[in-house]
Length: 211
Image (cartoon, rainbow, N blue to C red):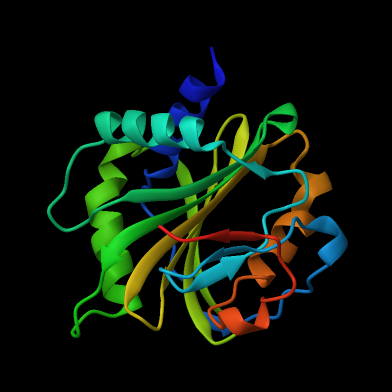
């Protein structure tokens, strides 16, 4: 299977969820070890930045375009959700992936909780037999809903956030179960680097994206 097909299958997989267990929101401080991270990826249009784990590199433009096209052809349209793949980071040697997806914009009446419920209702039927744990937390003032999905061969983290500009974003991480224990700190550091104050990241990064 070529890399585009692997990436497409992974993207489709990441958009699924099933029955969940909900916990209260907790304020969590993630210790960020910058030595475990790539330079920050900044999307000034969405208003978010984060550092992918070290060695998880962005797709080339042509490959990203092909992945977007295949994903669009592999998912079912839903009037309440609109997924747009923004960027995809891979470490194919480690079978590890990370992606940033825009999930439309919220109206004035929507909250992160209602968005998460809509998201869950729309997608849970795709993979009804998966074991999922759902929780929520706040980091750097940003409220996040997290889904932990345990597959036979991979561990998936799916994070949903409502940005200050009312944009809804999804950030996903996946890594093989066999090597996951060795990369817990990488993923925690990456999650801890999520930032909606983009001025703080200027001067720290050589990667910037406008779409």
